[in-house]
Structures are given as C-alpha cells and as structure tokens.
Length: 204
Image (tube, rainbow, N blue to C red; front, side, top):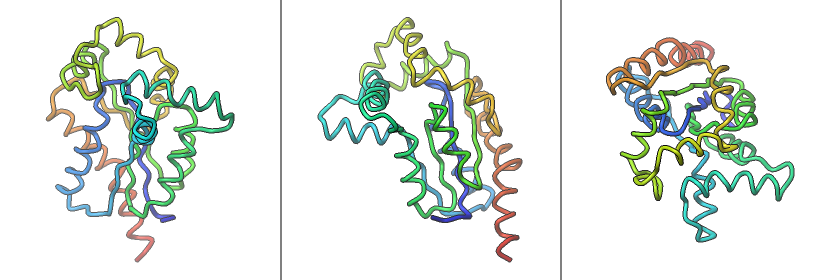
C-alpha cells in the first residue's frame, strides 16, 4: 500500500451531489496544476457487481437492502472491510471513496494515516428534484415524495448526518454549479493542497 496516499471519504444524503464532488475535485486539481495519480472508488459499485452476478436489478431499494442482508447472513462482514481492501491495493496517490454511509465506513476512512472526510448536503426538496431529474437508478424518474422520504429513513441513510457532523469539510450544494465549484476550490486550498505539499516537503 502507498503509505503517503491521501484517502478522501465522501458522505452525503441521497441526491446531495457526491459524484459531482469527485468530478469537480479532479477538475480543480488540474486547474491548480496538482497532478497526483488519483482513483475514485464508489461503495455501491461493490453491491452493483453482486447484483450483476446474481441477475438482480440494481435499483436503489435493492442496493439499500443488500448490505443489511449480508450483515445479517454473515456476522462480522461489513462493506467497509470490502472497500478497505480495494483502497489498500490501489496505488493512486489520491483515492476518493464515494458513499460513506455506515459508522464503520467513517472509521475505515479515519484508519488511513492521511485522510479527509467531506460532507455534501442540500435541502430534502432540492435533493428530491435532482434524483427525479437525473433518473440514475431504475424507477427514480417516477419516485414520489413519500418514497423519497422512506428511502431517507433506511438503515443505509440514517447515520449520514451524524457522520457528516465529524467531517473535515462541509459543502452546501443548495446553490448552482458555480457555487459548488467555489466550495471545492476552498476544499483544495484549505485541506488537500497542504497535505500534498507536506508530502513533497517530506520527500525532499
């Protein structure tokens, strides 16, 4: 494992804009001429692979059920442990881990020597409209407000605000894309760049 790697965990409610953070972060690093090797890893990708192998529709409902079922069937198993293996084996200098949802996910991120935790959030009504508009998962275009609120109370979602309270940086994604970019730039200036520069000084 690359002991100098920076692991950035990203947590946020449904529709908050976690994937957008990863994209804007990579853009901002390029704009600031920061060129570490990087890799984005998403917790739900592990579950989607299981769905694909089992011929199960990767709907939000099924992706929310799966870690709960696996934890009940295999005591001691956690999605965090599975993700930790991927993170440890990857050789990138900056590793973005999207989808921190369980307390053990946050503990896993904090277990890496050089880590940052980012909380992306927005008001529920804003997030609901985004989820319907993007239609990223099967059935989301027809999602009702009641169903959205029910999803917010699933075991995979109820710890997010608590995890977010302990984040190193909070992004309020209730505005437009330019406002989001501004906050990502602040994150790079205040948090990521100092860590990258400290690594360069240590290696000099």
